[in-house]
Image (cartoon, rainbow, N blue to C red; front, side, top):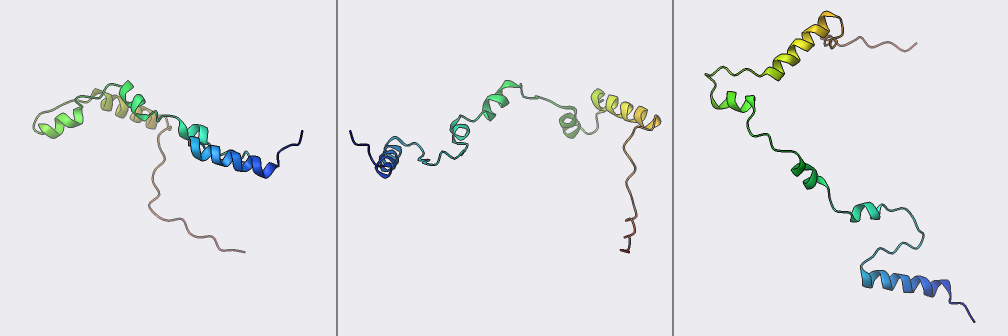
Length: 104
């Protein structure tokens, strides 16, 4: 039984790919097509978490004359002050650009 020429097989694969809407990849190169065909997960992840209904920032904008206390922000500021007192805070910003070193 005679075997079919490689070029004819490639033509057949190309035609079947166009008919069935698949990609034609004769070299077998990695294209990432498997990942790109998958459904996007963004909406499902977004819907998993409940939306934040009201925040302290929104309340302050709405009623600037009222005094709202953001306990989370207060706690964060206390932690920052505690870290600074132990020498673990963020470094101070440099106000003067460092001098350029001359090439020797």
